[in-house]
Length: 133
Length: 160
Image (tube, rainbow over all chains, first blue to last red; front, side):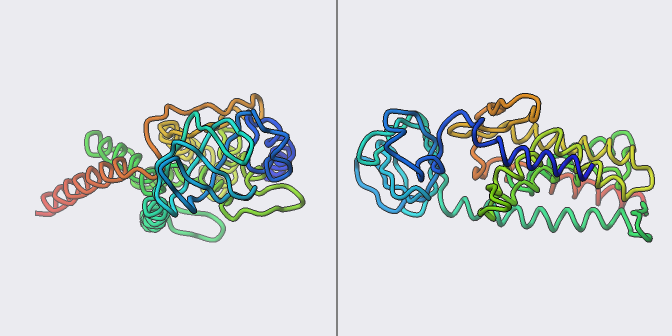
């Protein structure tokens, strides 16, 4: 099972990116010019904003996203058409407020602690096996 | 993903209500389901970023958040229990609850690639909630608290 899982992971590492339906920041990092006029998926942090949109810091550099309202520090996921001058016209944009994003991880930590408590209340290790009780 | 708190509390609430009504499943079984409910989020290792053996970590760990990958992880986890097949079945119930909850989420594009490695379809999402939304954690947290109070009351009344 572990070997099969390992093979699946390697296969996914090899093939996942090429099967994704849209170019991502990883593709844009190699060449933005190649994707001008195409729909791309971009994920980044808001570094600047004005009335016309926001600037996102991504691994492919700074990209301007029009018509999106977000605060500095927020995370934005955008599917849109890439234009020249590193600007993006969004078709769909999801804004994750910064505080809510970190709160999600804090809640997850609480959830993990709760799981450990609930699990070891019902299961005890005996040798290499877990025994109910 | 909704946060782990939601993934743990939703099946806990459902199974506790079931337990209160029918006297089953046991707390041990509930713990197994909760374990399965967090297994697919081992894929959160992607947040570490970077590359391993030339592959992006996000691509490498993607199978952990698919049915087949989670079933294999559940299979490995179930080996630690005396009745491994029974444990695997309960863990898989938790895995299914995980994917049911994740299907509520909205993404700009993509979503879950549930049928990997057979079909590369990324669109398993209903688009109802953002992963950072507070509504679901607040509702499930409140419901869990009420059920916990109810179970405690039941314990006290049985003792007296």
